Amino acid sequence: MKKLVIYGSKKLKGELTVQGSKNASLPILIATILTKGENILKRCPNLNDTINTCKILTILGCKTKRQENSLIVDTTNLYGNEISKHLMSTMRSSIIFLGALLARCKEAIVYLPGGCDIGTRPINFHISALKQMGIQVKKTGEKLHCKVKGEKIKGANIFLSFPSVGTTENIILAAVTAEGTTNIFNAAIEPEIEDLCNYLKKCGAKIKVTKNNKNSISIEGVEKLNPCTYKIMPDRIVAATIFSAVAATKGEVLLKSIKPIHLNHTLKILNEMGCLIKTYDDDNIFLKIKKPLKAVKEIKTMPHPGFPTDLQPIIMALSCFAKGTTIFIETIFENRFRHVPELEKFGAIIKVKNRICVTKGIANLHSANVCATDLRGGAALIVAAMGAHGISKICNLPYIDRGYEKIEEQFFKLGANIFRK
Ligand code: EPZ
Image 1 (cartoon, rainbow, N blue to C red):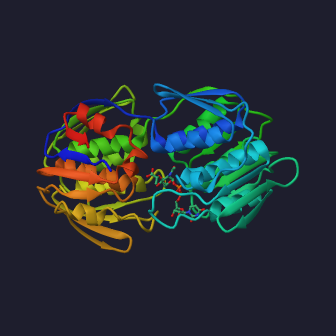
Image 2: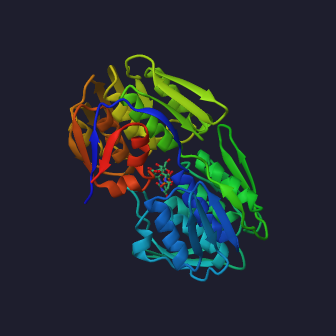
Image 3: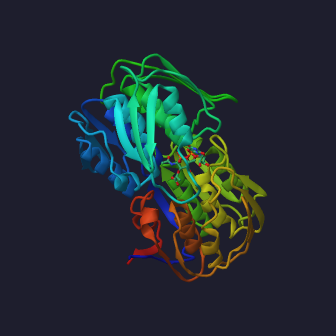
């Protein structure tokens, strides 16, 4: 198995264009099933998860073709409605196929999804919502056999007890061509969900997102959707990973094609830690270390617009270099501190109790041989290795490749000594 070899403490400097978002591209790729024809998805990242999504689309009868940064998906001849246990287990997003297949085929057979081991990650919200939309669900072991009762999926008023990202996406896909209107109360409103809605609206869907203290999404069912050409949003988590690695090396970077509004909370934290941040022309962000890194007191993960759980491991790695103590409170996933023992191998000082983790920053971390335990935990190890003195090695790269496109090439462009071997 190949490893990432990183020669740490090299100041990163330069400019980069940010890849398309993984967590937006997956539901959008799946949503193409709702159209009959050729969709062109621009800025669609080439990742393990998008490759596996294309494998599923192909098995269902669709044609997929990569042309540089774009993925072309022709859904004209979709004939299948069953996804194998193996393919379902390759990622969490596979469960989103359920809403789309039910809308197109009225029946679907799937299995429990896979995904990073960051918590129990049940699918009870998905199932309960689909049942409220008139879908019959039969669960036998890990197999789910779902059928639309009657002619069409029925619009419904659905209240989510927690604003689950995947559940909101599944409901949207089931609702866009359903009979009547669906209202999702306490909906997730992550930028990736808005991107999915924008793609669907371009195809002819009628969706309204209302953001207030009770976020809601209203979807009025339409007869049919038409395929379209759509440019996927830039990846805010990848952008924040690059910023953190650059900050750990006391460097500077200009990131292009990234929306500052998607990174509000994160830019505020990086600024508080001592980074100078300037935004240009709506979609360029410059970051430079202004003064020695200092700790922010408390970081609590919350659904959007709060601080994203996906960045908790990455900012934690950066906090290990910052003077002072940072308290991390993980409210979304109960098992998302698996990177901590690996960060400790770099000499980081961290204490964990239940969902709280406290880091005490030190000026210098040393090199280490570590293993990624999940996608963002793996990215956190890259941040630590970039800032640490000496040569570090990171194994379990398939985790990192789920979300980062040619990561070593990106950092190489910023002057990093990083190799995959
Ligand atoms: C999405 O996962 C993202 N994945 C995750 O990104 C991200 O961490 C997460 O949202 C939260 O922002 C994709 O978009 C592909 P949830 P998802 O449903 O949809 C509980 C990354 O690193 N829950 O919002 O699976 C669940 O256990 C990944 O890119 C139920 O209890 O997240 C969790 O505690 C990792 N029952 C909470 O809700 C359900 O039926 C939030 O999960 C569904 C969820």
